[in-house]
Amino acid sequence: MGRIIVEVMPKPEILDPQGKAVRGALPRQGIDIFTDVRQGKRFELAVDGPVTEDAIAQARQAAETVLSNPIIEDVVAVYSADEAGGTK
Image 1 (cartoon, helix red, strand yellow):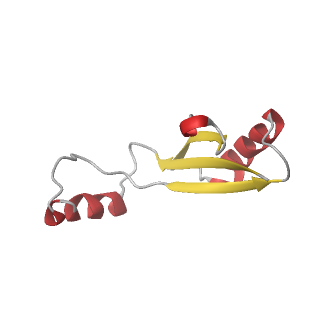
Image 2 (cartoon, helix red, strand yellow):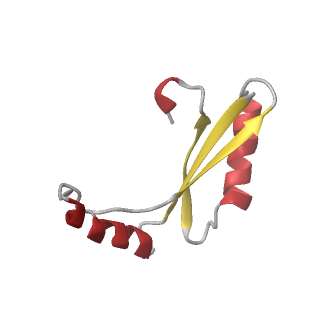
């Protein structure tokens, strides 16, 4: 069974209150190196057999039409989970 990863992020011009809350919490945990945090969504789609180019294309279509809201979100990556290092 193969897996396809879809990553969706808010568009840069959209406010991200969850990311802002995480950014505010990090220094309280002693982590102060990060200047900004944006929180997105990750989907894992399973397919029977290996991940093919057709499966990736269908996952991208699903990402753009069902998994994201194109008005406020960008699909930033669609890739096989089996790719070395999760290359996007």
